[in-house]
Image (cartoon, rainbow, N blue to C red; front, side, top):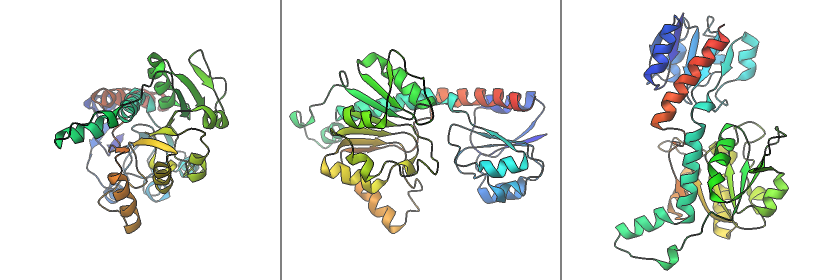
Length: 309
């Protein structure tokens, strides 16, 4: 039995697969085209975001039994194509949900206290205080859109900040507790001071956060996106920033994250994001910590054991 690992992983994952009797082939720099050429003899495949597992790849993988996704995003796996061929698939959001939650909190506190902005000013020789007066998170209402692994982890980490937490999830009920109110989008539109997106990317959620969505908020909001870039329309965010509907925004994800390969329109949007000091960008690293690398490996090993038994 052979497993192809197409991205960087903790050594524990390689060792764990070997202990289960697999030959683990570690090729973290492999391209999609190289994966197509190599996949034929493999029983298992471990991917991150660069390898799309659809019919093209599956047709070249007659021995493939399972696909493991490092992290959460399942949009890189064609579920119908896998189901039709009897290929099992799973992700591992349990491994990096806390990392994402901490990153989201860091972005939010950065925005509310003008940390990046004032840091840049001081390093440029400017000592500006009053225009950088911040806002406290305490006492605010935080709306969480989607209450899966990362949404729930974000709610947990917020509990020490004396905030009201409203959480909306179209596909879950009964998850409210003493700290989290199970809510509707309408209530979040009405009450939220802060909104954090934790949506998976699906046909339903693609560009869910558009101009109409952002214009629905009664109050100006802080907007955090650590989910997927294409759940939010960039032009809508820029418009909302300029109109004041969004006070400030932090994004760990973009519509197109291959920033060296943007088309003319995407480059225009990206340049506008970079020029806007009320927007903070990070390079899809919310789930990337020393600890999450190990945790993801542990989760994947346990899930391989389950699906192969």
